[in-house]
Image (cartoon, rainbow, N blue to C red; front, side, top):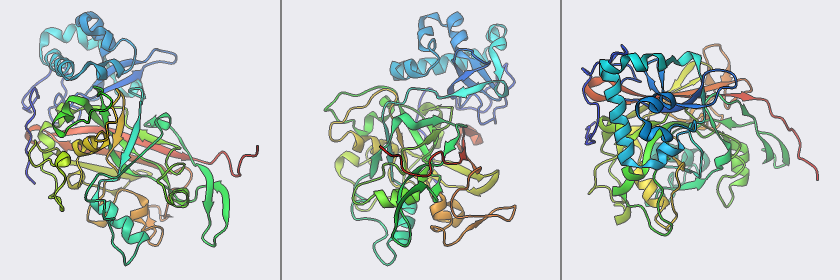
Amino acid sequence: MELVGTGTNQVTSRTVTSWTGVAAEHPFGLHTLPYGVFTDAVGSQPRVGVAVGDAILDLTTATRDLLPEHAALFRNGSLDALLAAGRQTWTMVRETLTRWLTDDRHAEALAPLLLPATDVTMQLPFTIADYVDFYSCEQHAANIGRIFRPGQRAVPPNWRHLPVGYHGRAGTVVVSGTPVIRPSCQRRLPEGTVTFGPSTALDFEAEIGFVIGTPSVLGRPVPLTDFAHHVFGLCLLNDWSARDIQSWESVPLGPLLGKSFATSISPWVVPLDALSTARIRPPVRDPYPLPYLDDTITEPWGLDITLEVRLNGQLISRPPFAGMYWTAPQQLAHLTSNGACLRTGDLFASGTVSGAAPDERGCLLELSWNGSAPLTLADGSTRTFLADGDEVSITATASGPEGTSVGLGEVCGRISPALVDRAPRG
C-alpha cells in the first residue's frame, strides 16, 4: 500500500513531546487533536473541547483567556462557528493548540482546563444542515447484488460511472450513545401480506462521515481540487437501516423510512489535517471517470483507515476503508455537479465500508448473507439482524506519522424496543 501524504501544517514527528504527558503513540495524541462538544455537570452549558490523550482541553475557557481575538469561535458550545471560519482559521487554531501543548510556559494556565474524559458527557458536536449518504464501496455493492440479484450483474451499470447516493434526514442524526428505537413501518411479509409493525431486520452500517465547513455558492459546482477548502474533517458514522422496510419502499425510488429513523455519529470530529499521513492512492477505476471526477491529475484522497465493529463487545468485523472505489472529493464533486450548494454543517457519508474477506463486511446483511448464514456470538446466541438490547460499537484508526495511529474515536448505539406496533389512525 503506497502512502502519499502531502499535507502541510502537520505535527509529523512522534518525537514531539507535551507537558501534558500524553504518549506520542496515543490515538488522540498531538498528531490527532479532534474537536468535540461536552458538558461536565448536570445543567452545565456545552463547551468546545479538544481531546488530548485521555483528557479534554476546555477550549471555550482557554481561548477566552489566551486567544480572545478568536474566542467567539468557541463561545456558543458548538463547532458551528469554527466550521464556518474556513481553512486559514482551522490551520491557525491547530497550530496554536500544538504550540500551547508543547510549550511548558502554557502548562500553568492550561493544566486546570484539562478534564478527564470519563468525567464529561459528549454532545452532538455541530448543527447538522443537510445529510447525504453514498454507496461507494465496490465490495459492499457487489455483495448486495449477489444477495438480491443472483445470477445477474452484481453491480448496476451506472455504479462505476458515478458515486450513487441518497438524501437522508438531518434531524435524526444523533450523537454516539443515543438509544436507537426500533422503527415501525409498513413492510411486506415473505408470504406477500402487507402489514405495519416493528422492523424485524434492523441492521447497522459502518461508515465514515465528512463534515462541511466552508459553504459554496448555489449554481457553482465544487471541483475536486477544492475538497480541502470546504471539508473540515471526518467522524465515524453508523447508518442504521431497517432492511425489511427499506426493501419494500425502495421500488422504484431509494430509501426513505428504512433509513431516516436514526443515524449515529461519533462525538469527535478529526480535522482533515490530521489525516495527512493516511492518504493513499485509491483503486484503479474502470471505466475511466468523466473529467469532473478524474482524480488521477490531483492529489490522491484514498485513506488508509481500518474500522472495527463490535456487537455486544465482541469484534465481528474489520472493514478496510482503503479499498473504497469512490473517494470523498469525488463524492463532493458529484454532489455539487448540478449546482447544488454546500452549507456549513452539511454531512455526507461514505456508504457502508466492506472488504473482500468475510470478516471485513460492514453490515449484518452481508455478515449473515441476508439471514441465510447466521452470525454466532461468543455466548452461543446467533444473529441474522439486531435484537432489542444489542449494542453496536464502531471504532477506527488511520495511519499516523512515524508508525503512530490517528484515532477516530467511537460511535455506539443500543437498540431499544419499538414504541409503536401498529399503524397510527387518523
